[in-house]
Image (cartoon, rainbow, N blue to C red):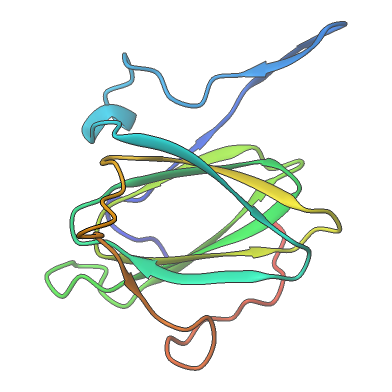
Length: 153
């Protein structure tokens, strides 16, 4: 089941004897630049840890897992959306290098499904405002119905 406004792009890795390179976001990609870039940050998750749930009223997110393996869970909570109530999950990281972009109003969370600390980068549309954060939170379990059991894709 899909969610309106969610975009998943495969990342192409260019490898040689020196290492690897992958482009996350390009200014000449109209789909990924539908929202501005306001901040780029990195978060880590220890094996088995769930970091959820968050949603924003204005902020767009673009997430990718650079090290390890995570499940990204999304729930559409936009009352005016044709996909209201729909859920999606993506496996990101080792063997599944993708960038997922999603709009405001989507509950989102991460679970480390790998055996090492995971490193996730998020390219968001606005800098974090400590005085007035554009963020609402819900507990990882018990409030929103989502199956965090591992589903490889």
